[in-house]
Picture 1 (cartoon, rainbow, N blue to C red):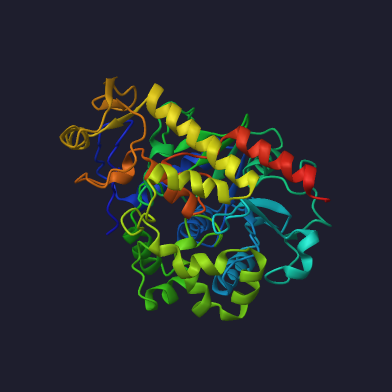
Picture 2: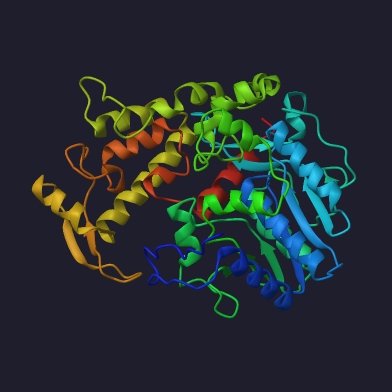
Amino acid sequence: MLHHRNPEPFLFMSKKYLDQNVYDASIDRIKFIFDNFERIYLSFSGGKDSGIMLNLVLSYMREHGITEKIGLMTLDNEANYTHSLTFMHDIIRENLDLLDVYWCCLPVTLPCTVSSYATEWQCWGERDKDRWIRPIPTDPYIVNINNHKFDFFKEDMDYAEFWDKFGDWYGQGKKTACLIGIRTDESLNRFRAIMNDRKQTLKGRMWTKKNTKYVYNCYPIYDWKTEDVWIANDKFDWDYNELYDIFWKAGLSIHQMRVASPFMSESKSSLNLYRVIDPHVWATLCARVQGANFIATYGKQINYNSFKLPEGHTWKSFTKFLLDTLPEEVSENFKMRFIQSIKYWWRVGRGLSQEIIDDLKKNNIPFIVGGKTRHGNKDKDCVRMLPPDHLDMLRINASEVTSWKRFALTILKNDHTCKYMGLSPTQGQAVRQRQIMEKYKNI
């Protein structure tokens, strides 16, 4: 049986249990979506979660005799596994009677965390046509630079901007639902995004979020555990991406398996699997984005406790040394984010557990307690501090607290968006990067 689990509300609400399994809960949510939205489309990546999401919706539509098509949007990042492409094309072709498909192979800018020299890369760019990882598909539902009908599209636009504007375009001014297969079991960031009680929802449903004027992001499987995904695939005999079978044979647990752009932070830890699973595209993938081979070889070795400080350096001096070795644009990006982090920790602070606070006191780390946190249960002390050189002496996980060591490791991980530090890309950062690319793209 699929067990319902409302995740532990770390920041925004108290824990609740419902006498309902996650399958039935998700079906109720899908019914709510069809009852309350005029336009519906699904974001499909070929991963296990979007696959479950698509199978759930198709099953619901056929069971309830719904024949009006829903949209399906795939943003093809050029670097997909062959198994993923096979699964995605097969399930789409079998259900074209219910799907209005937009498989987008467009020159869109994506984050890159495998290179020290580039914070972004562009998939399907015309200027890189001779280096594409694979030929562009030719199916009738493929959207490319020559046949798209998107009045909002411009070459090199950021993927997040494309995401929002596609929703507005597809919705045509009507109340629109974008179905996304995100589960809070995957990460704390996903949990916080869905459980944030400050967001605007539809009729109080926490699994909805108003994204633009007419478009709501909807997360019907947000409370599924990874085990539930595979139980459902087996119980209902649903098609799934057989890449996960290969991952299993390669020794990955079901919680380690990720299907995403190989150059993003979420999946670069498994980048080395490309060598074995898709060896025929490995060479083109390495040639496509500088640094892919290095990260595949050494990426897993860079964590908080594994890296040894070079002799003669403090972590602060080593961070400054690394910044001086980087290209100016990349260095300035890191400096901007580090300054932002330092100001935030000193002026605002972050809520820490009593265990961490006691550990800081025991080791004579200077900090100020500035009252209780303003979010969630408001029961944590808000700690303000300047970054110490390192926190190796703490008993708890030192990666939760600011330090110059965290800054240095962020650089070594090529984490240009600074997710390792708990930050996300700012709107200003995205705009600045697009302006720079526009200015220099023809030089």
